[in-house]
Image (tube, rainbow, N blue to C red; front, side, top):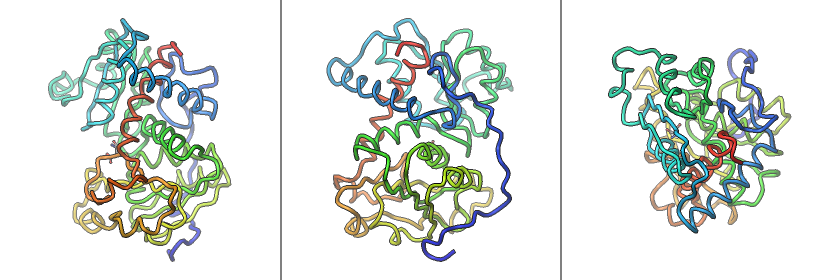
Length: 333
Ligand code: ASP
């Protein structure tokens, strides 16, 4: 691949069946498994409610919109932001939580209980369940056996739809629009589920993509094909310097160490990209640097004071967006 070459995706093209229903009649009592469920109207609704939620939190801290409702958080993988922002979101909406977030080793999962049985148990106590699990497809599997709504909080290398919602909300808040933007995505595009969800969701808009990764961490073919199906311009390169002057959004990601079968391969690519003030000197005045976090060296701490560094605002937005989503799924907005 040469610098910014228009790429031909690697591997065999095989279209994935889309089994998750679209949210044509709104969010009430629906599973949230994949960004392929959302329309622009769905996003605009969530964004508008998230803005209201932010105003409520800033003004009075909480509301009783979901008083009496219970959220179960079932996390089979580590999490800081997704779990705590869902917990905070439910608390600020007046609801309560069953937090299985400190490690399923303290639940009957460690006794060998199956995912369907754990889901059946939690849904007899809770109104909605957020699940994070290392296997792709696990959230769908949970939804298939559940009567209550399931929200995908990250399914292995698959998707992370609620992160994509907060990422889109942040882009809109920071830059005032999504249409017409040039979005650069950097780092682990292969295993980064937030990249997969965000890239797919951006396809609802008129955007242009620049992908930057090492060869072994290029964007998966199915995501690339979704972008192509929408007819959006896409380029790939190995070097952030090739795109830094052009992008409106620089979405930086961590190399997902836990997904590598061969740690020697991880060591080869781990420190390939670091966003520094020197690099930022070439970026537009009005652009944003985003990161789903945690960062492990991809963005120098010296960038934090740059007004274009939006990752901490992005993280805070996660709570407002998840408040909006919970209220929508429980039929209140
Ligand atoms: N927190 C995000 C995720 O759960 C990103 C990451 O872990 O790098 O996918």
